[in-house]
Image 1 (spheres, rainbow, N blue to C red):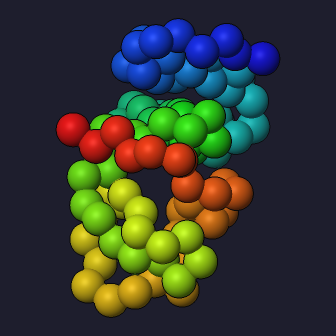
Image 2 (spheres, rainbow, N blue to C red):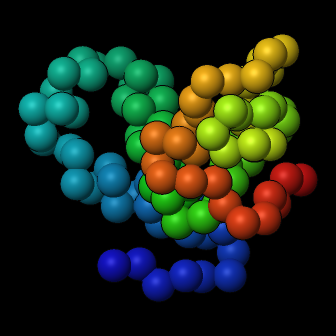
Length: 101
Ligand SMILES: [Zn+2]
């Protein structure tokens, strides 16, 4: 279990490093092929999901949207209408406060 460092970027980097170590050599990793960018993108998504579960808003979540379940939420893509569900629903709830910068 992770302790909570004050610096979200340090935590994010540490999580990415841990995920990389966990994934290398697994069938999931092999399925991504030899495309380095694809592997990096995969690690990024997993790390962001983990950050979200820990209550952090990923830096790429620069848009605001409204989810029918969660209410106002930060999001990493722009949506014009109210969403039926969102990434925060999937991980079990949005953070108490948004740290959008
Ligand atoms: Zn939601």
